Structures are given as structure tokens and as C-alpha cells.
Image (cartoon, rainbow over all chains, first blue to last red; front, side):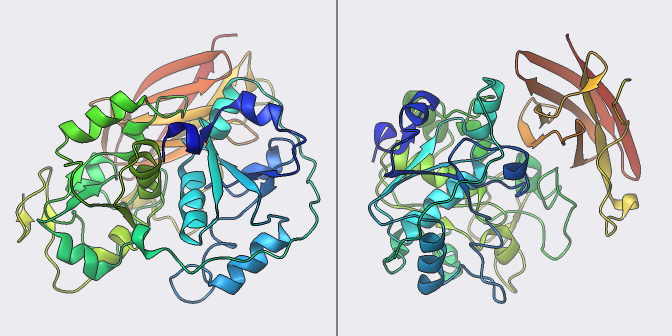
Length: 287
Length: 100
């Protein structure tokens, strides 16, 4: 993968406005943002109600995913272009999620909703109606999703990237600063993980930095591009943004997103945790 | 302020104010709330920590940690940086006025 395969700009979106094979999908942390206005023709996917199992902590299963896409009028042959607010945070998560279930052609609108709004481009409130499809998903591609045992086994051996903010990494706070602080996990990070906040990969307007800047960002922080990588955050959404940068823009072949992330790891009994601003050794402790 | 309501959005009922260091306020231009702005919270080293879009009434809120923060507001054709101090158990309230 490369930048040209996975990113489009606003002009591309405008040019494909009436292309029936292109489906624009808005995914926002603020699930009401779509109602305030969205890009003409865009459908909405709710990261929580549509993409999470209603009972257990996991994703919707394959038949549910197929039903969701069919009802939204998304076919296997369609090019799906995601966009959303906050540097495409949740849009990147949806991108990763669609790749997990094997959708062929997925792209992100660079800069997302923010750049679109800052450029004063048109937003509409009309909800499009798309004819239903009969979507067929693949089995989950586990090569891009990490589970807790793999993460424990990765301590000290593969690139672990904690993409939360420095204060969350060090254990000074437990959640991003626009959310109430939760108390059910121990603070800190997975031992040996380096801290590269997801937001460093984006410019202020939400567009991704250049390939050279991105390579320098991860390389200088200690990521070995010749090794496997696992990225995590609090619930796996910011790390999907980093997964997108490493796997889709920079073309790294083995990058997994640990969607259990800190809300799972920080609640496990008996696993090592590092506290403080440094990665720490494999045994954890105050680093 | 014409049509602008002070304060952040309504606080969720389950928030314990004593445990939070809240920064909230409103973005205005020409005395009117700006509903299509983005407010970024930067830590004392200038590192991005969080971002929220303003509400339909121009309001925003962060649950920050105690300390000094910078709020960087982006709106069509305007950008503004403001320093703010947050403390546990209190609400730092501010109005960000964008150039007309």
C-alpha cells in the first residue's frame, strides 16, 4: 500500500460526486455530527451502535457486518471513502475495520471533516437513499489485529507503540482529555512500548504529514522498520490511525492494531506495567 | 454577546466535578457563536492532547489534568491560541473571540 492507494483529497471527492461506485461514509466520535451536516451523498456508520457487539466486548460478527453494509447500500465492488472529525480518528478505525473484514477498495479523505469544514466546503443535511446490496464479507484478517496474549509475548521483542498522549502513557491520566477519567484500570503503559502520540502523524488541519516526516517521526522514536509492530491506545481507535500510517501510507507489511488496548491490558491481573515517561524494561515497574 | 450562551455544553450527570479539571467555554466571532470551529488542547510542551468540534451553540469542553494548557482554535479563515490554567475541582471558563 502507499499514500496514493489509500488517500484521496477533496477535489477527488468532488470529481466522483455522481460516481455510483464510490460510497462516501462519515464516521465520527461525535455520532451526531452527521446530523449537523455531511458531505453530499455520504452515509453514516456509527462506530458504537453499528460496529460493536451489543453484549460482549467485540466487533459485530461476519453476518452482522454483511447485513450492515448491505443495508447501507455498500457493495463488494464499491470504493468506500471514509471521512470524519478529529484528524480522521474514527474514520481510520472504520477503514481498518473494513480491511479486517476484507473489503477491497477503501480510502480515506485526507484531512477529513475538519479540513473540509475549514475550507468552507458544502455540507448538506439530506440523507441519501442507496439501493440495498447483498454484501459478502471475508473472515477476519487476523494479520492486522492483535490480541492480549500476542501483546504480552511482544514485550521486549517487537515494536510496541503506545499512541496515547504523553500524560496517558506516563500514567498521569487514564483517558483522553475530552472524556471523563475512568478508574477501572491501573495507569501506565505496556513495558518496552515507545510513546508516539497518534496526533503527531497529522498536521493541525488533520491531513497526514509527508512520507519523509512520518518515517522520521517513527524512526527517531525507536521503531525498527525491519520488525513487526503492534500499536495500541485506550480502546483501539487512535491506534487504528497509527496502523493506517504505518501499514497503508508507509507500506509496512506486519502491523497489527491491539484493539483491546489499555482498557483491557490495564485491567489484567498479573501483567507487567511500566509507570512514568520511559518505556522501561520487560519487567515493568517505575520507569 | 448576541445569541451566545456562556459555559460549556450541559455536563453529563455522572461526572464527579471534584475529580475533574474542566476547561470549557465558547468560540465567538462578532458576538455570535461559531458552530464550525475545532478547539485543540495542547499540553505545556505544545503537544496535542485532544480536540473537539464546537457545538451548534459554539461551545466546547475538556476534562484536562491540573496545569497550564494552550487552546488552539481553528475556524474557517481564523486561528487563535489561548493559555489557560486548569485545577482539580474547578471549571476554567473562557470565551475565545475570533477576529471578525
